[in-house]
Length: 289
Image 1 (cartoon, rainbow, N blue to C red):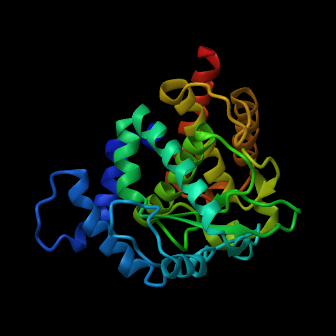
Image 2: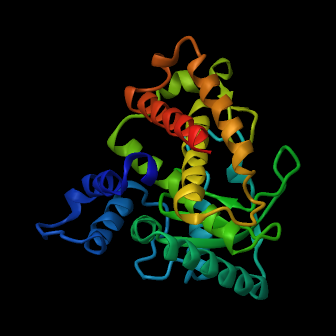
Image 3: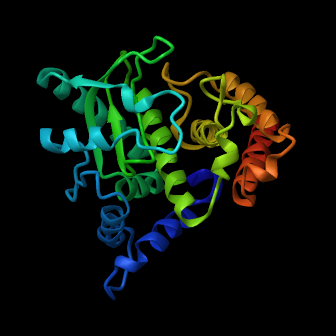
């Protein structure tokens, strides 16, 4: 979202949602926007815990339990994500994960002040809970939910370096920015999107999923590809596929979306424009490569 629409539009979306909670205060910096934004989340999603502190991973056990309960309450959950959160993470493992996440965050922040500013605004909590196996027999490293905007779940499953974590944080931030954009601009006609006949090919997981998940996957993949090209560089990562494979799979995913004969009854003009932007960005990237 930051690379696709620009940081100014991204911050404008959050401003629009937070405006009713500004209490007449003049907002002139991104940092000043955080308090009314969190007030918006309090009203919008009262079931989740909010972290008003400056450190997103300084979350206690009580807050973790509330966030875990709120997680997964999205409109469609084809991967049964609300059932993936398992047991608490041992304290020694949690400390290792906190260090790893801080290292990944600091690398990401050092490479892009714009991403850092928006991440610090949009993400209030990162919490650690083990993953159960999914219906496909896999453990998840973590993720996000539209039912808990601003919080990121990390299970710690697998062994990744700080470069993986920097991409993971950008990946999850993109989901949250899409959740927030949907509150400003309608993105999907959900009754139609729910039908299996209207599924499309996911850009990252590379199998057919509900269209809202596929749109998210295209946007996330495009952001990761652009970040590698412009500020993250090509590092030793295993969490995401290679750039070449992501380009191929994302192109196929976009094609599967535009091949849907009833696309305008599934996606709003905003989402169709988002997919066109991603398509054009990837075409330009392919020519530059």
